Length: 261
Ligand SMILES: Nc1ncnc2c1ncn2[C@@H]1O[C@H](COP(=O)(O)OP(=O)(O)OP(=O)(O)O)[C@@H](O)[C@H]1O
Ligand SMILES: [Mg+2]
Image 1 (spheres, rainbow, N blue to C red):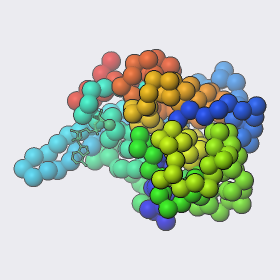
Image 2: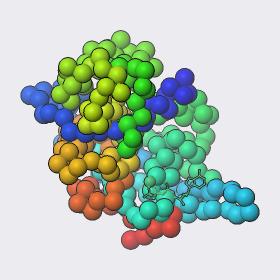
Image 3: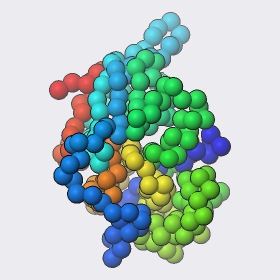
């Protein structure tokens, strides 16, 4: 179960066609106006988190006392040089890893105080993760991959919701294809559907456009921010692209494992 849940959060993206049905309709709820969001408690809070790796003969401090919080519905870009700790930070904030010291609160729940099983359940309920390299399960069809988060919760609407998301992504004719039969763009759309089907409170995306051409990248970015706006899904995105970072409400700069202004 833990393995299955962790697989779920590995997600990717690509452009998909805009259909007449809005994201609110697809997800079954409606966006609230952005006014008043500031009054809400943070959906994500990093409290002085550090991550240290003990290696033969040395201790490597990859993150050093990082603190920040993100309010519900907001978007945050994390930028910084290669090796500055962006992926490590994203993994900690998503509950895929635990900090060496400090704490992460996802929607008010401390991940340090959770057991592995509780943390997996928290991820299933609250988190979507978009990985650069898709991470779809190779022997499952597109439809079967997308429905997993809801299957794990025992939701009866898993199949119909998955079909709805794949249709929204322009993949109605590819639902029964295996990942090996899909193009890179199609794989990313399947992965994005799987990230959003569980109606996550927070979507984490680690350089989701890193290996895409400019046009495809533009479409993905547009759709990510559109879903963020329409459904109030909080968006935390790691990117090297300052053009993408400028679209976010806020940018965090990491350097040598510390946040810098
Ligand atoms: N499990 C691990 N064990 C030891 N060192 C690690 C581990 N994970 C990450 N690191 C080290 O931590 C540092 C930061 O890695 P991280 O992947 O977070 O960087 P990044 O900012 O995402 O880089 P990039 O932009 O290249 O993706 C690197 O020096 C990396 O080698
Ligand atoms: Mg990285």
